[in-house]
Image (cartoon, rainbow, N blue to C red; front, top):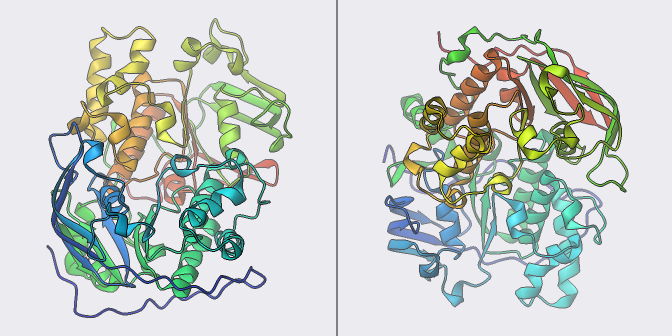
Length: 538
């Protein structure tokens, strides 16, 4: 361990009052949980290496802990184990001991003591209506009926999900689903609150709103908190302690936020481990994209929209209208805006996966070739080489049983399975995105950050002319983030068009030639932002 935690702990300075006009909470106070790990480790079924090993950790009742580590260091595995969702029936192997209040997390005595918000909100949505979903956990814990709905309303108000209780959970945006998942756990008022990147797909205002909501719940309930996040600066204000997992096992650093993140003697070591440090910009490695430069975008026209309106359904109202935009070779476009504004719907429409509600979307002859001009009419084989789309949730696009087969699926689909250059590219992508040690692993068993890198790599392997990415930097540490930027710059230099739906301001600054903002039912182009704001290695 790099350095130890000092005795005692300090309360975070940030304490947020409940918003005015919000429903009154139930007034109950959870008994905060204690966590202990002694030589604990976990190896997933079918893997030769452990996801976590040699973990020694003690968390006192009521502590607020920010858990950091490189992508793939085992942060999510620790949270899943504490929530009791890992066990012998999953095919994994456990070493050492792990306990919540002295009992193994999977022990019936631990039922209801922990609440976990997963990286993928879709994976924990159970019911079809928002109110029922938030009430579900509390009902299963036998909370008195008179307390449940006040808890539901208070939790929804806390997370800023302002939709009717009868709203369909399936109709929510990705960011709204994250708020829903958090509200569902908050309504249970657990003694141990486990948050796995709870703000990953939220707009900047939503990030602060959720952070403050968590603070209010902790103030009210006294619960213990363990949060995994790459947004270090945001959460450092709320927590008492920062624990950094070492990639090879054990703990790299442990202590108060100011000590762990601010000590100049340790920042270099943490940066080398891929930890996002406040005030430190990642260094982007050189790529074949060395000829790429900020502001490039003078390539040939590939796709144009006029008066475009988009909707998830043919019969529903459009989420935005009147969009006029064009996509050119060698151009990087960032699409930003608040959650629920229609960014992902716009991207899916541009990608030919949704039919335009009204207006026109046409491919230029250079992109369409022998296919028809309207992308939504293209067959999958025509689409894959022209426009590649990376979904917001990586698991929604996985089709095979191994990482290697997933990377090779697209090239094989277009008849390149015997192309030596293509296979070399597959292995190059795996190596650069730190997936080479996982080639035989099942894609669904990867960490959230690894899944995201794999989903992007699958599209890079096919090399479409237009690449559409929905939240491409989700779950990335500083090193993998920088490598991803370098790879995309290389694609731009080769004439690809890269369109990214993102809330990551640093990513937009590092890559985008143009920025579009989607809000209030319209698309607006923002003034150009210097794309060299993040340092590039000489």
